[in-house]
Length: 521
Image (cartoon, rainbow, N blue to C red):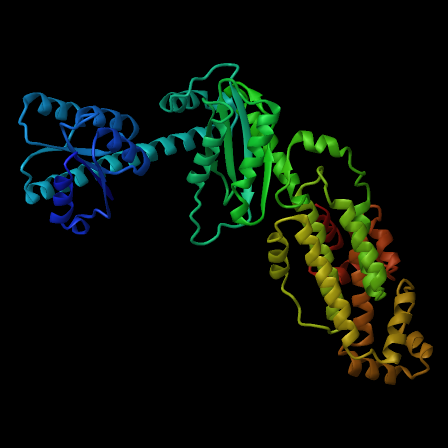
């Protein structure tokens, strides 16, 4: 705390400063001024919590000075000191809510007691203000929450909270919603949501004095702001305020931000909020920090048709992986990224589901080549869900694909005979009459020897490998709704549809129709 001593007698000031252990009272700094004019200037500049002030001084007396101090520092507590026990001074002290009045010659013990009482009163004022501020913040948050649902369902609550905040509702008032989703909150940061809201409100007042900012946190780390005012903001001013809101979050790392269209009337607040929610979903497909507005998206233009792109994506990727064509995979990933980057028609979860399937393609290929231990599906989902933007999601897949080819190159080359057998199966698995004898003849080995040899080299029997290969191809085809299940059966080498269905359920745990429903819903 700071204490200001104002007295035109230097000996008095020096005596007071030196006679008391101010640190023990909680006073960290003692300031001095030699009259009311200088005392007022020091008070403006240094903002002391306590003022010990003489009554009679040249140029400006203590009463006149403290009347002006009360206008700029209403919480500052003052103590009069004077050698005159004048009734009028005592009345002035009461009017100014002076905590005490000490007479000259001054008694250090009496001053110390008066200062301790002043500190107690100052802290009491601060505690009261904090309570009022907390109540006001809570009311503002309740109002913000009510504005996130349609107006007709809760207009009485909106009116009640607005009146409590002193907000005048009229049909033409300015309303706009902004949603910010920071990726993380740094530890031990000085920033807080309340502090940011206050910064935004202070900035708003540079454009429109009666504009206010209220907010509510919805979901973890989704901050919904409502900007409210009588006159509103021009388009240029609104863009400037949105830019400032983004700047408030630069210390939080990456963030997504979307602004609904400004509206007129409190009943339209929900419409602006709903616009912002939809835009925030699309912000996933743009670089972090991009401010999404409907105007921004209209300038981008229409998107290419999705058509059968997602359906063919998984099979294209699987073919490139199974043929170990790294260049084709690279081209595929570039095409995939260009297709979804800047998308504003699909929801993030739709694209996350597709990427999940592509990760599974890599995991199955890795298992087939014994490149690494299986990655649990939960870990894949965590990696996908933790991707803050589409760019991060795509980089995760691209990085995993790159590691797959690196590990494949580093692993021991496959036995030529085994490779020849697998290649033959890959080209002939659709033939329902394909047998172990056909395979053994192709590699010029006896049936018994080829079975033993394949099992020793791969850990699987030939029939197990053939079944697995057919089932994996069936899975790919089942995700394409253009193919009937009966057609898929024959495409993977089963002339009997019932037998195919039983084999597929034994392999995957689901019937073909159940698997299709699960993968395409």
